[in-house]
Image (cartoon, rainbow, N blue to C red):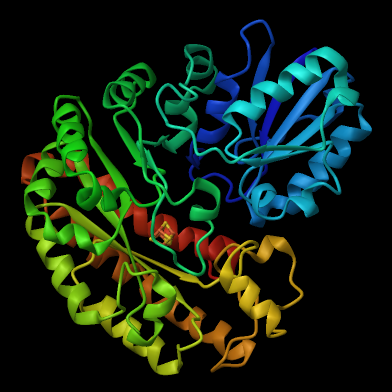
Length: 449
Ligand code: SF4
């Protein structure tokens, strides 16, 4: 076996020379490769991998989401032609393995921490013929000591030079059941927690000062594991961090004490999945939000009063949405006290109940997987034509991501901090909205200024 080459297919490119977020999954998988085997990580958001350097004895691992699976297929087929072994894992491989099996020697279903090591052993012993077509890991293993990022990988990545935002995981899973969610189908519905000392050790060894938590619903731990959260915040408060962000739900507003502690632990913003301000969508929202604008407004105010910011995450295109929902959404965002806003298009990802429903109703559009980026219409909506929904989404994005709106929200966000911290917090106050504007522009037609 010559080497392991791990590749992240290109998605959103670079912003001012750096990629938005580090390839965290690949960093953890690379850390599981035995020391005696050379390992490389190639992030196509930074630079393409020179596929013509591949030879027999190389093992290529590609981690892909649905939106970049077409690019993953191109890489996989070319790598196979060069004689390399090819394994594809990640969200798409887990949710639609029969597709990935058409172009990879092996498909990794699930988390892969154990099967990845098994697969390397098979390849090292017998090459491609030793690989099984499918490696399935759906044990939802405890996170104690799982895939600790090695010093070899930390040195190789040079995250500070190449990435704006290092990613980090502290908890995993979500017991909610939103009809459109892929996360719970990949990470499971049992909430799992990493040992706090392992989290602190990883932050220190990676020398990261700011990070984005990949946890599907970190904020739910305020309700289900308050002692863990309090201990975690105590530990993080002692570190020299400039700020971090996480994904949550609006129920955290009921825990002002934990919110105060999280602020002391350098937590900057909660990305909260309000999803909708249309109460008729509550069935699709898995119990975390009732789609009521008044309660969302109240939650935003309560959380911000503790000094922590709120990024509102909204999804458009539910079957109950009408043109009036877009106007209501804009009115809500315009008058809310949100720090930043993400507006995405409902997408029927493989493996979700929502896809099963639109498929059964004959409403799936024949679209390339690359349009499954939550910024395109990929199914026939109920109360719009496809063109009408596309136009309504475009109208809303142009309003929400106008330079004036971004400046207003950024200044509001910056004003949460005392003057002495303004310099340190300026970047984070504007970058989230700018990043969303750019992502939307990158995927659509709006000029990316
Ligand atoms: S709350 Fe978030 S992570 Fe949990 S099921 Fe809903 S969309 Fe998925």
